[in-house]
Length: 149
Image (cartoon, rainbow, N blue to C red):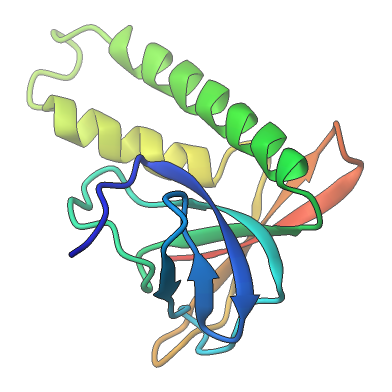
């Protein structure tokens, strides 16, 4: 049985292809590039349109962080960024975009979050070509690598 994850979750990668989720369950995971993640804490997020949120190639792992508190700060930043993107998207006049449904706006906002803050995309993958996005974080003065679609 799968857990009902929020769009963002903090997980702890404990060894190759195994993590402990937000509900303290040990779960297997896979990545787009087919390589295991380094041990540590990660903020995981899924595209808005994904209903069954599993730790597979649809999940984006942001990290690793040595401390859970560091991952929590990034999760809070991602929530704020998502809210600001959704706020801007909701301010678009329905007359301007008559055919955009709420789900389409959320998909665009989810994609906007992944590419926010001048992120640079680089191709690589697991079977296909995955991509890595680097988010410069002013608070940490370091770059967080993100694996995702």
